[in-house]
Image 1 (cartoon, one colour):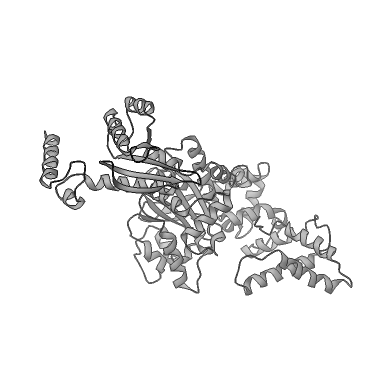
Image 2 (image 1 turned 90 degrees about the horizontal axis):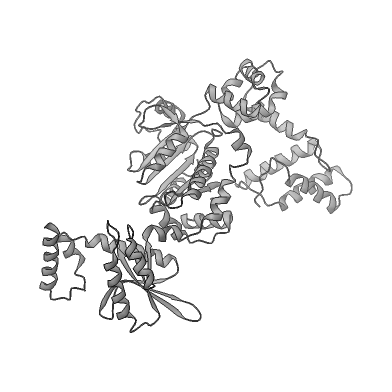
Length: 519
């Protein structure tokens, strides 16, 4: 009865305005009377935006041949132009056959002016079997909004590639799950379980994952996108596309859109517009991980750091899911972090950074702290990396002063495992600097240095590279700089230095494990 009354009111309102019932009234007046006009218009505009991203020209609410068309599409090429009328149905039920009849009638009217015009029906929910069959007979295409979203970009190659960041690597072989403490929650929980639940929620969310250097933030990110990639490949309609952007690679990109565009182009030769990615993100089709915000931050220019942070945060709209990882001290000092991890309410003290204040308590934002390894997690890691000798390794770690404390941090535990033959006979304590020194010495003394560089030469080269990185305020050098450094060094040691000598030494360095190469 209520529905009938509403329809009568709608008819009377239209007739009172002296307008044809096919012409829609002013939306503000329509909304005032309680009709669902605004939602329908929003659906039309969202659908039109999708088609524009696909390369169509899209006109919304166009009067043609006596009919009011929701969207009129045009796609031009060098030979001809193709046209489509689009009927949008934002209904909670499946579209039935009567809608197909209406669209066919509209198409006949439009074809008087555009003989090559075709029709598409876009529904929020779906279509009845009868409607699908009837539409196929009339060559009218039927699509749901979700189907359009899922097909706007082919992520297959990207998703396949992102799995290799974890699958088949040493990380996969040795990975040990950690715990996380989330602010305003009770105690530590397994981090993979937490993010599984967080991702299952339909609403959007921005999660800032904090942790000190070497606690495993990047490793966790790689594990998350790997697991999500498998889920996405299994069901592309129900799962988000995992996107992992290393902000170290984005330092020189200006703006969010450039960061996104450059990432996909480099990762999968995928030439996709940033606007498309941002649309899919806010529609809940993507999980976006910004890994290593500290790579974009600076302790000496707080304004620039905040500017970078706010620029990335432009991505957080609608149903977007975003994880941002960063070293803790850019958000909170050590004392305050320790109080937080003890579940004490410290509030927003003066030592809270501007970044922390920018998100704390804001709707949709959450903050968590990745925990270092517990005793049982350390043991699990030893069992994976040293399956035959892990009990001996555990005793060594427990017997050497300070080594057990250092082993709680994943990056240092990895160094300990690889350096155990060097440090197992030490009776004095071991500091983090000792581990780094031992690790570097093992690298220096490897027997696969084949050509020009002595141990002294390797040390000189590393120091020279470090100095140049520092003075130039960058984290990378062009490989040609190696030739210059090596040439200067070799000329001091040899009377005659050929280009072949320099090239051999340069090749040796470029393939060294301590250097990261941008392919």
